[in-house]
Amino acid sequence: MRQPNLLFLMTDGQRADTVEPSTLCQTPHLDGLAARGARFERCYAPNPICSPTRASLMTGVLPHSHGMVDCTHTVEPYRAKLKAELPFWSQTLQAAGYHTGYLGKWHIERSQRLEEFGFDTYEVEGYHQLKGLVERDEEMQVRCTVKQKGYRDFLLYGVVDSPVEAAPEYQLYSDGIRFLQEAARDPDRPWALFVSSEGPHDPWVVPRDYYERYDPTQVPRPPNFDDDLSGRPGIYRLLQGIWRQLEWPQFAEAIACYYAFCSLVDDQVGRILATLEETGQAENTIVVFTADHGDYAGAHRLMLKGVPAFEDAYRVPLILSGPGIPAGRRVEQITSLMDLAPTLVGLTTGDDFPCYGRSLLPLLGSEDPEWDSEAFAEFHGQRFFYTQRVLWRDNYKYVFNGFDVDELYDLSADPHEMHNLAHDPAYLPVLEGMAGRMWDIVRETDDFNMYQAQYGMFRFAPVGPEWQQVDPHS
Image (cartoon, rainbow, N blue to C red; front, side, top):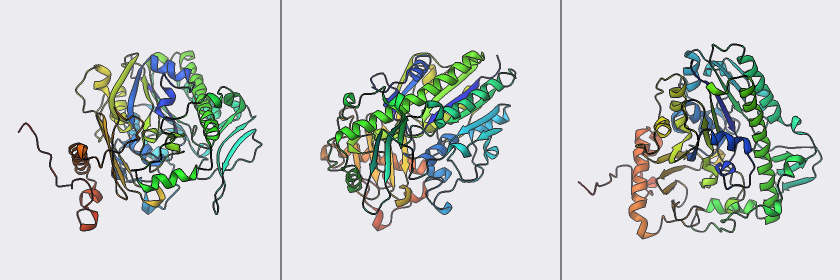
């Protein structure tokens, strides 16, 4: 059998729990995909916004290493620019003879000349419309607009009477279906197609048929909805204040619209998976489903994503299915979206892909492999430059905040991140150990801006970059 095909499906702003068994969110096609493959339960984005994570996904390195530390449309190029000549895993597949295609939201760099990044065919211009504030003029039966003095109105969610066929996601996946149909005419050449939807990115405006699949009165209130965010950075509370004008019924409507949007995308996933079957290509196609980041969607009485470094924004769905991937596998170890670069190259061409990410193949080959269960992320603050580094290691999570107090959570005892342990003396050894590991990664990845920050005004981490952990067994 020739090399397997690759179908990569990515959404924008979809939380991991939207595809988990216990969720209210209805995604039957993704449920089926997970049953036929592997679901990674603790996969983290290396950044909570679009462009930095997308560039990391394609290169396997952290944002400071690739340079696109903010979104392409939000800052001038000197603030965020993709470094030249970084290898993309798509180039490796193209060099191995794959016919490569990209459809949908790109948002990795500004040229939009994807032929320079390993794609033979692409269409991206028509599918990236959600930049900043989005205005929708059509009549909506349900609508929520956030109003604040001196700011333009912010549309959060709405319900329209238009059919699903009018949704951009429907057209995007229709284009993907045509790609698969054409590829089936050349069965001797492997292909790789990346389909990247903007949904379920806000505003969560959905057709009534999808909204009516959910009853807002049945949407469960997040356990941390009443969190006052005391003991966390002050900017978290300022952001929470934006949404104080909304009461729980409006949050519930928003979440219902968000889930409806996820269901709309799931139906499109079902269409393209059916095409794989109809064209006889399913058996030899690796399918990947993931998202670039999550969304608070009411957790901690917050919406969207950004500087509050909570699980809801960072933990993303990741499902792999196809040849070489065990069916029904649940992977509980911590992984990163950066790990996809070496994994996909290994599954398709069998080659290595040098990068910071780690191949997931050991987790697919054994249920108890040797695996350092950790992930790392960095946030460069969007327009306002909030510097953060985030480390997950086993059950602990550490957030270095370069602008306020740090955070430490025991996710096994406090999965909803209600109790910051960073100032609890009993957890000082854990805090110092996590900060020490952060500095290890900073050095390993040559994060110059961080490890050279030793001047007097920068010395407020629990331990500094020269600190070395003491081995208790030595």
